[in-house]
Amino acid sequence: MRDSIMSMTGTIVVTNNNVHFYDSLAQDEKSWISHLKGGESASIYSCDSVSCLHPSRQRNITISPEQSYGGRAKQKLTDLKIKFDNNYEFTNSEIGFLSSIGDIFPIYDYIART
Image (cartoon, rainbow, N blue to C red; front, side, top):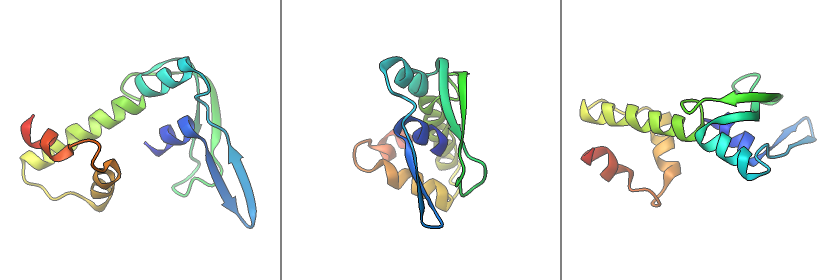
């Protein structure tokens, strides 16, 4: 999901005392909708490695609803709900995801009720 966020908001990469700025690729309403819900003619950044120090830009692609930020977030929440329902322990990454949501979205209520 970080590549989606990076594409929507832009990012800064610092390497060997060099600063590289990557602008947001969601500069207008159509681009935002493509990134959030899926759509055509979008551009995205892709990470070259786990550290993502040299992201590449892919142009004029179609983002499917499943690969959009909203689709990925929905799938992640579905996966968490399944783990919760089966009383499986969350990983550190999943705990970090839940923590990043904060109090804006009552995640526990969502997982416990649906």
